[in-house]
Image 1 (cartoon, rainbow, N blue to C red):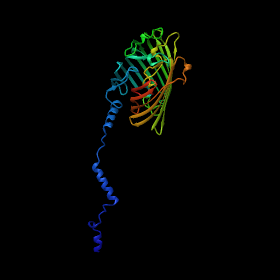
Image 2 (spheres, rainbow, N blue to C red; image 1 turned 90 degrees about the vertical axis):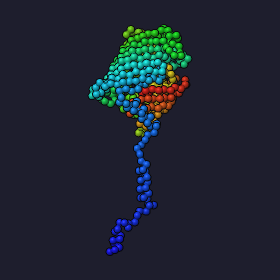
Image 3 (cartoon, one colour; image 1 turned 180 degrees about the vertical axis):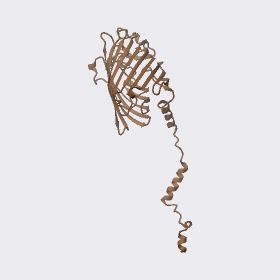
Image 4 (spheres, rainbow, N blue to C red; image 1 turned 90 degrees about the horizontal axis):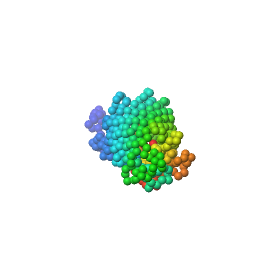
Length: 392
């Protein structure tokens, strides 16, 4: 009986061996609990989060604005102010000024939830100025030494309605824009265009036409968002009619465009392809002004060439990007661009294409690209591109 009482006494129970696996795990957990603390992001993460919140997710009425007035204006800095007039409708007022003195001021009313969220209306008006737009002549055989500059001021007002009748795929866009093109002598280190050409040798030189441009787009679009996408595509055709009030420089332009994003390994990689074919036709005996000819060169098409480098009646552009998402707001990309301009549609083939290649990074939200930085190389040199919005 005494032996049973001794065995049942807890004070005499054998203590755990300190070298057993159970005691080692308990000691490790106790030591780890002493060192636990909330996660503290490093300096790089804090900077990227600040940029993301400012450029992509800001709910403030004020925000920075980097859009340039025209291609080739250099880095632009400005501000925008948004005011909601109802639950969804808003007015956005914005302006920017670039290092080459390009100016842009505009106001836009947007109604994004029309027709049970199947339509969006934009009404916009503003004024833009460029001081040194490049003109190298027409065709792809021009030289960098042929460059001249011209200036342009353009007041404008537009209305654009986008409708998706089936919510997905089918996209219909219609709109009209009034504008007046006011030519000015070119500034910068290159000769002004009127010192090298005359109105007889360069159609539209010195003219100040007033246009009513109407447009209609028929397309199929199944991208999550046009401004940033890793899957889906867009295939469409846009008809443009430029009616000159004085019936001297009226013409028509048709743009055929195809975009396809191909995700690989659950969007770990994305192959993005883009093709754009633009063709113009004259109205009766009217001329197409040199400053409205289809063009290639600059940050959104042939990125390794100067802005507006090639111009002519018709153009062909082909682009490919291999995009690699790094994290939720940063992608890297390797890209290749090729294209040409011609005076005749039958010459728009794959012979004699101008091309470039390069590498870039994109800062983005799930539905928009806030900043794109590309380094592009061509046979005419290396270009550094800072742009807002996706290349395509």
